[in-house]
Length: 82
Image (cartoon, rainbow, N blue to C red; front, side, top):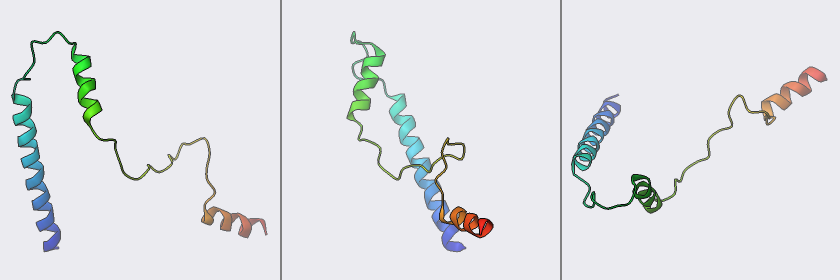
């Protein structure tokens, strides 16, 4: 339990530090704010520099138009039908 609380406190500290850094970056004026490019063009340039998102694929939603038959469903169907 202590380890979990310690880890939670560390994560809160890291989150607070990241929020402070974000606020500091947002408070700084953009270096080239007088340029004649539109804001949408400058945001797309920032988005292009970011790396693609990586991670596991999201699970299929419950309201999907298809349902993949799981092993449990197959088991119940065979037990009920036989």
